[in-house]
Amino acid sequence: MKYLFLLLSVVPLVGCHTMSEVMSTSQAASDYKAVSVDGKRDKYVRERIVNPYLQSPSGPLRFSGSSIGVAGVSSPPIAKASEVRQEVTSVVPDSDKDWSGFVVANFPNEESGGHVGVGLGFGEEDFHFRGGVSVFSSDKTYLGFDFGGRLTPFGKLSPFVGFGGYIGDAKECEVEDVGAGYFVETCEKFFLATAYPEIGIRWEVESGTSFSLFARDYSSFGQEIQDGATRMYGVSVDF
Image (cartoon, rainbow, N blue to C red; front, side, top):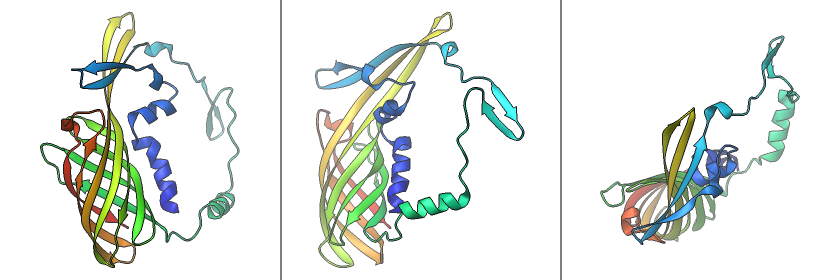
């Protein structure tokens, strides 16, 4: 279960740009407008005026002994180490036998670019689900989430079949100085959604650790195939 808490802490940091905007107080994920690109796909554009001098101040710093704080903001009580240790122990169970972490990467080529990610697997030895965060590089670099499942019917050295999908976005921003301390920020986003079947072979080196070689055939939804939805070969490590 410790892997679950690790993944939940990483997702907001390395997930897609849209999630980062939703969680940010200074961004607006809903202000994007769809614009058709050559009648084949959409990009999403947002323009906004930015003035760095109008940021809300947090208040002057104050010094009290060896501590530093912000005026008008009270500091939360500091828990004792023993209390924190006891709370964490009660939340995180000792057994992790059903959970596993994994790292996956493909062999880059001109058509599909690269794909690398980390995540968690859950299930029995012969079938388990997988989910994680990853970078999908093609004509653009997409940040997002992948998910899927694998059926591994035979022991330590076994072929497998699987299925899965990926959804992510790519974001590019430009800032233009319009004078008087104001800037116009223009951001463009492209979304990529794919699904794939996969086949491969898995070798369990020791209990809980295995290597897999796989081949995937990506199909896209709403994008041209040059955007990264294509055949891919790679390797994954489960631990």
